[in-house]
Every structure is written in structure tokens, then in C-alpha cells.
Image (cartoon, rainbow, N blue to C red):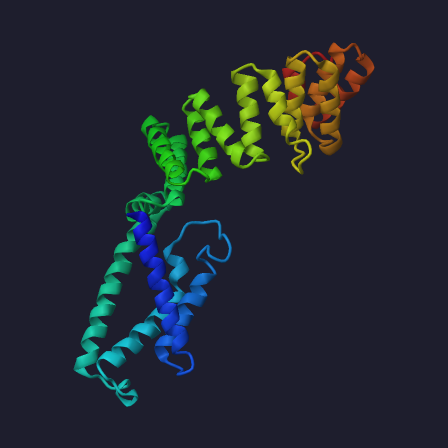
Length: 318
């Protein structure tokens, strides 16, 4: 059914464009209306490039000018209105125009209510576009946020349901797989979260947050430090050189018993992030455990200078 609608829509679009091109030489007002509509709409249609958001009313503001010109031209043709009549009020064409304006005004006012916030907007739009993977995803993300603000569990269950629908509609939509993993992780359904992160990475192997989050799950939840190291390490050749990455990778090596490698990772992280108190502190602890006391003290001093609070949480460097 969905395919038939898409084919019918495509055929109708091509037919209208064909009509417009045919009337271009005649300088038809209908043609200009059609071309204004499609040219301005093409920029945000995802047909030329991905605009990175769902379709929305605001994208139709400029194309609506072409639509209005086209409708006016069609009405003039149907009612055989001459150009000199356009500035006079004739019952035969004023009535249909007024009816169109009233219908459009009602629809606009009714639609305004759901623009209160993104949650209201996407909640309504999943009804209007039930086969849109992107709309189901965005509604799911809003539900995750609502759960975070309220702590009400049902919102998280609803989020999982909505984003699962997005994945079902478009199995190659890596954003949906990633956010479904996030929802499962928040629900503490860790095995399902890992499975969804793996689906994300199958589609986007260098997905930064996907690699980070699955690494954290393996390290902190599963205590599988080898797997954690594997996923963190995938980002070492990327431009993602944050203290967060090197800190967690270094900790994973340390927890796996390889203190020498942990020290190497912390040192590399410090080169990119010299003002990270966490990296200096973990480097100090690691060097201390390796028996390199003098080097350890230097990093303790640097960590405490950057963040005096870290001195109260760690007394090893005293």
C-alpha cells in the first residue's frame, strides 16, 4: 500500500512538472506557479541533499507562494476571468477564493496548537505520517527526554516502542539504532542496548558515541575489559581526541592488568588534553602502582593544581 502511494505520488509529481515544462514557452502563469513551488521546495525536500531534519510546515512558506499563484491561475482559467476582472469583485470567483482562504485559515489555526513544543509536534505528526522513520525517531527522542525530566517509566517504554517502529520502517537508519540503544541502556536492559549499538556500528563503524557507549557498557557493566578496549581503540585514529576517551581507555587497560599500556594511553591523552585533571590523576595513580614515585608525584601535583577538589577524594599523592 505504501509503495503504491509513493508511485502514485511520483507519477503525479512528474506529470505536473511535465505540464509546467510544456507551458514554459507560452509563459503560462500556472507554469510559473508550479516552477516556483518545486524550485523552492527542492532545497528542503531531501531530494538534492539531506537537510538533516523532518519535513515541517516551515519548509512550505516560500513554496506556498508558487502554490497560491498556481491556484489563482487555475481559478482564472476555470471561471474564464479576464485580466481586467482581477481588480474587481465578481461573485463567481470571489466565493471560491474566500472558501479556500477560510479552509486554509482554519487548518493553519488548528495546526498552531501543536507547535507548543517539539513533544506536542512529534506526538501529533506520528499520526499524520505513521510511516515516517524520522518522525517516530524524533518522537522517541522527545519521550526519552520527558522520562529524564519526570522519571516516569512509561515514557521510556513508549520511547522504545516508537524508536523500534522507526527501525522497522527503515532498518538502515543508524540514528534509530543508536537512540534505541540509548533508550534500552536507560531502561537498564543492557544486552538489548549492546545489540542495538552493534547494529549502529554495523552501519557506521566509526560512530563516535556508539563506540564510546558500547565500550562503557562492556567495561563498567559487563566487566569485559578486552571488549571495552577494542571499541575505545577504534576511535584512536579519528579526530575524537577528548580526555573522556583516553581516560576510559586507560582505565580499561589498567583494570585488565596492563598498567604499562594504561600509562601510555594516559600520557597520550595528556598530550592532547594537558589541562585534564582526571588524566593527570589517573596517570599519577598508575605510575604510583608501577613504582615510578617521582613521576607520579609530578602528576598528582598537576592534578591537584587543576582541580583542588581531587585532593580531597584522593590522598595517595600526599
